[in-house]
Amino acid sequence: MASEQDFFHRTELLLGGEAMKRLVAQRVVVFGVGGVGSWCAECLVRTGIAQLTIVDADRVSPTNLNRQLMATTDTIGLPKVDVLRQRLLSINPDAQVVAIEKVFCEETAHDFHLDDYDYIVDAIDSLKDKALLIRLATQTQARFFSSMGAALKMDPTRIRVAEFWKVQGDPLARALRKRFKHEGLFPQRKFQVVFSDELLQNQAQSHEGPGLFHKAQVNGSLAHITAIFGFMLASLVVNDIAKG
Image 1: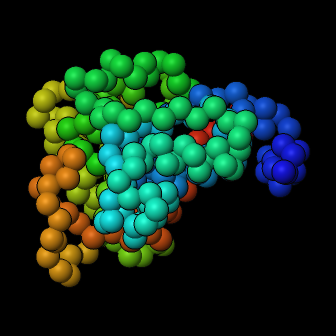
Image 2: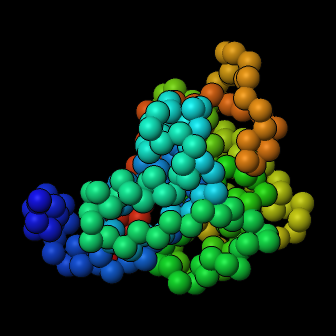
């Protein structure tokens, strides 16, 4: 078995010993471990994050196979967080990975103790729950990063990072801003998001029934896009920790 020194050798060469100590000490939570969040979680663990909580109430389905890290024919029907936790521990057995199989929503928000974390990452699909997490997370002292919509996109060169209120061309960001203004409830501070201004159309009709979050429309998505969204979220966390 590889030693911890071997595991982190290439990372430490680039970031340095002090940054590695900070990575191990930070408490990170990722909400939503689907096509974006699953890749984010793996990148964080491979880079040195050792205290990670992953949150998702869904189970692996056949429609996840095209883009979600832990989705295989062997894991269909299993809780996403449990399968992902096993994979992350197979990468770093010394990591403390907490899997919470629960929906983040108005009824459960108080269960998550957001003040306990140094970094909060949002990869939630549901508009209502995403808006709630944004408002609550920006009330904490934690650094907060969020993913906008990763569906209906094919060009990875158009994926980038911006402050939420400056995002243009993303329907999810637009819908969130509209919701905040309509409700008169706003994020307490600025935060960075990963987004793309590309917007394509579905080329076929969906045969999927309503999922866990009862989405009005199922949109096509691809692994090379959702993974890059996840990696960029992870980069925001890692770069912020590395700079001290």
